[in-house]
Length: 379
Ligand SMILES: [Fe+2]
Image 1 (cartoon, rainbow, N blue to C red):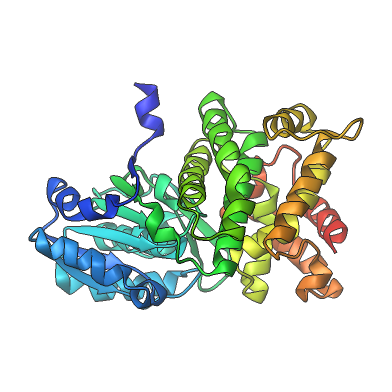
Image 2: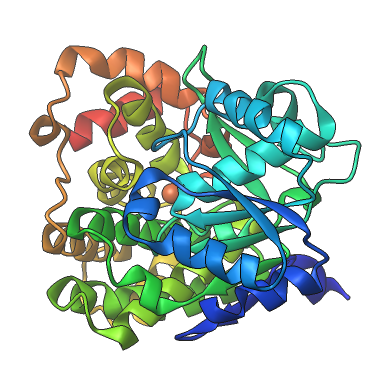
């Protein structure tokens, strides 16, 4: 049953699906759960709504909110200490990627002990992990479809990918109503991140028939609705396409990993605190041009899937131009000099980028010299 192995998470999609949360939690055997959601989600009222639904179904629910974007290993340890005395049997990740990754991280430490650094890679948990439900409120990371948590090391600031079959959510509740209230900046950067997941998974060295299918579904949904939802954030159909597209793109990552744009963006986040999707926008068009000759056939396929014409130009150049247009629509800079990055920092950023795990799956091998070349192109 290969197909089932590729989708560890059951997705429920549609307006009002959130109302099933209590029943879903009961069906999974939840009795005492930890709801991990960032302070913005509490302010938006979604946390109270979720807890109300859980309590109405007889599930005890406690919130953990003591974290911000880009959770690091220290944040996860704080969450573990908070949750340990509660004796929870389950977790709910309610919010954007940080809430979902934070829930996964706390789950690792609660059930298997140690530090987040111990789980870098895949399959390091030796004890069963607690069942979890994801409720994304942004359309972006696709963490809801993946068995990996992205947690920054507090010491090295390197983004660690910590994966395990037990870290996959049992159920993802994809309710487009919940993404309507995303602030415009979040909507733009998270949406562009999801698009980057399509572009990167399309060409990785690990791509395969399964990942390609998810990438293709995601491409049509995301690129077709990104500008629409920026123009009209209340467009329920466009919100739904973005949410489902981000989930499919996450499923593509689960099956094919990512590439150089993520390896080059992560040091920008670590060094300057640049939001992930914003850092991705700085890098992605330049990575596509840098990969253009190696990934020519694949980029031609993607450009065709997106209905892009470009005459005799290289498919990678055509695609990069479209990506720059999408970034501009979201108000996202695609040049490092416009993002406050000093030229003198590029060499050390390149050194950091070359050590990022995800760079090894890029179709054109990314070493220090290659990373510096792309940063120079992006400047
Ligand atoms: Fe990403």
